[in-house]
Image 1 (cartoon, rainbow, N blue to C red):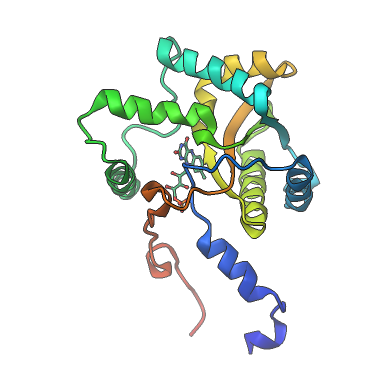
Image 2: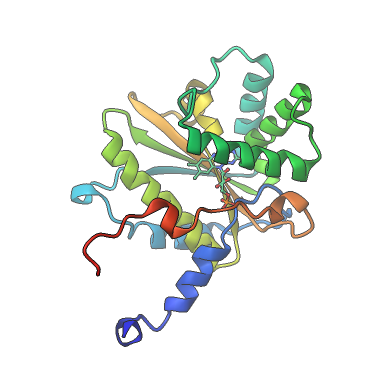
Length: 231
Ligand SMILES: Cc1cc2nc3c(=O)[nH]c(=O)nc-3n(C[C@H](O)[C@H](O)[C@H](O)COP(=O)(O)O)c2cc1C
């Protein structure tokens, strides 16, 4: 029954969504500006509340990316900024156990022990080098907007990641950048009241890196859905 209505490319869309992974090791192969413009051209079709399109993207490569990374690495090493509270502490139980599962898989794939505080800090620092990707993106938003516009933003960011995946590129969305709002705002000359949503690494995946092959578990549909009135 569903086949009658299905888009002819439905299986392609499914495959792109299912095969996207957060990628944290990249090859050095450059990505042409035109390719990135094309994927942002796809992503701008993302829906938003009242079509407000709250996204603003800085795309960096080469010396401009290195300069931002250097400033962020320095800020990370200085450790003068307060830690980023991007989740409540404590997390609700179900989410905390998934977060722990993430940590086990991630640090396990990197061979880093949970107790090794210094090495974990080095792992975190790689975020600011955009994990060695040739392209770094910084997504920002007018900070007067509310959580509903941030919802729009999430949809946009997933659309960027899927558009990238469709052309063989890999990504990692990175909230870590938000810790250094001031450094980034200075560096990119943000207008007043503009806020970092997250960053993103973009490039071609290093297929050899074990950490790129982690399969992050997902809950089955029945665990997060309630169907009412179907039978
Ligand atoms: C909004 C957002 C922020 C994220 N921030 C980071 C980050 O700062 N550093 C990082 O290594 N991964 C980050 N991730 C990647 C998640 O850890 C990853 O998406 C999750 O573990 C699921 O794995 P998968 O994307 O491979 O399916 C982020 C993902 C999202 C959606």
